[in-house]
Length: 112
Image 1 (spheres, rainbow, N blue to C red):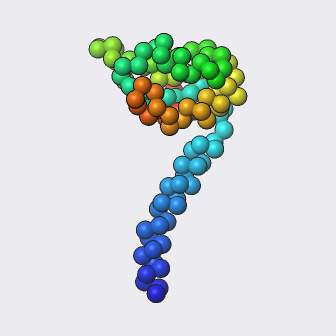
Image 2 (image 1 turned 90 degrees about the horizontal axis):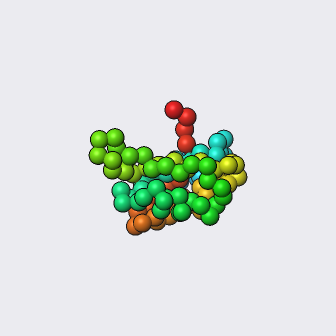
């Protein structure tokens, strides 16, 4: 009995920890109106990117990061809103959604 419960704990604890960390990631509050968006399709244009995030508030800047040599998208970008509340709304609505066939992830942008 004790051996079976130990095996069960070994196999179940990492999953509960992982789900707890995932909820912490989503529940952290923003300190800046700038968001980091990863998982973008290489075919997504700057205009399409901005249009996707436009319904959530007034955008100051929406930029896809591109390779200097080739000009191709690196698959991530940044969106800056006028307020933290708008950024939080966009984060809640767009995180883990599909944009042009790819699942995107929205996180707070970290300072350089």
